[in-house]
Image (cartoon, rainbow, N blue to C red; front, top):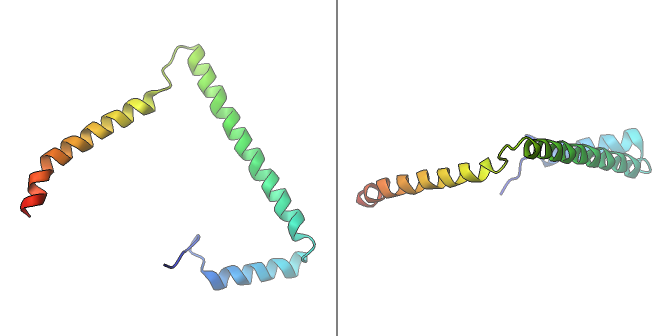
Length: 93
């Protein structure tokens, strides 16, 4: 199985890594990776804080935040109805 990450293959990733090592040096790469990790963590924490604030304010206003569960139940009902309807057709073909 050939894995494609952002339409970049193995040789292209190798060339990019080689250029990074040449530009920054092998001793700077861990520092760069650490900085990227901290940045990603900050974005993730900020996202979780925003979600928590939205949920808290919705609960204070008395809004139902469990609508996703209701939507999933309805989607499953529709899937079951479609399966019931198309079941005999699939078997006959």
